[in-house]
Length: 136
Image (tube, rainbow, N blue to C red; front, side, top):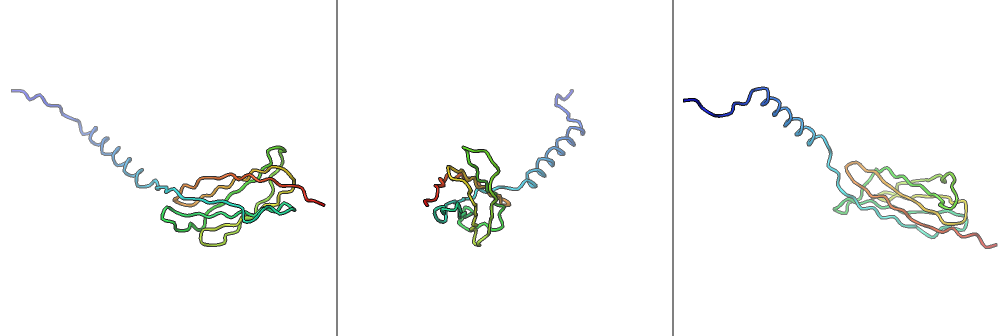
């Protein structure tokens, strides 16, 4: 009597095991990114000479500060395309960073702040500020 079962060749078993090992290696090597919270606000109103100071705080989901993050900020004036002013970023400590801009022209400015920290997903935020002319 002849048996009617399917025989799988060793090549397919080896290919199956190889694919499983590749998937497992990828799952182990890809780091997990955890969402972080970012709060961005003006330290004080923009001064008449256009100095804007922004405080940024980064926290992980447990509320612990995130240190050594890469902070990027850019200020643009939508009404007038020009080079963005230089940004000075200072780490104050405990996940707090101070950003300083010198906004040279009066008008509406958009300041976009983003951060990168190893193992964290950090959203970017945009602030809008109106620089008013100095009264003489």
